Structure formats: structure tokens, C-alpha cells
Amino acid sequence: MNPNIIKAAIGGGVATGVALVAAPLIVGAMGFTASGISAGSVAAKMMSAAAIANGGGVAAGSIVAVLQSIDTVLQLSYDPHWTPILESLYD
Image 1 (cartoon, helix red, strand yellow):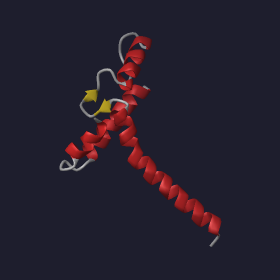
Image 2: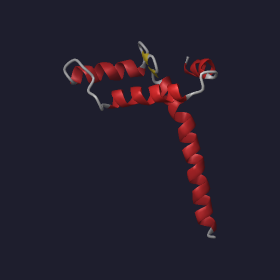
Image 3: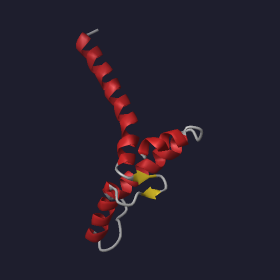
Image 4: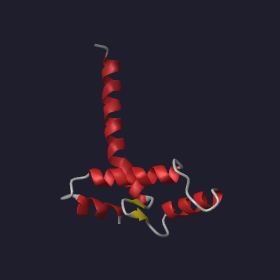
């Protein structure tokens, strides 16, 4: 088998693993949480800008709505025994 193909497959696997671990941390650090958007966070500023641009509400399917959904799904997918530990990473 071609060594370049093997290297590409390994690199792709590592990149996927990093993305899966980093995604909830990044989204949570921005202020998107399963219980809502944290006051004073980047997420709150994004939500404010989106609401102003949309005449008072955040449009379904907007980046703010999608990021909120992503964090909610990721939070709910964790084992409940680990939730307090994982939530402490976002503080």
C-alpha cells in the first residue's frame, strides 16, 4: 500500500479526533451553554447583533441558533456522571 495514503488516513483520523474534542470546548468557551447563552459573553454579543439585524429576534438557522443547538446536543450527549467535570471546563 502507498505510504502517502496511510499518512493521509492517519492525519485525517487525528484531525477528526481533535475536532470532536475541541468543538464543545470552543463553543462552550464562546458562551453557548446547554442552559442558554451566558451574559456578557461572545455568544451574547453575537445574539444581540443577530437580533438587531433581524428586527428583534434570532432567526432559525442563523449561526447563533446553530451554535446554541450544537452545544445543547453535545452537553446532553455526555454521561451524566461526567457533566459536573465537563461543565467546570467551561467556567
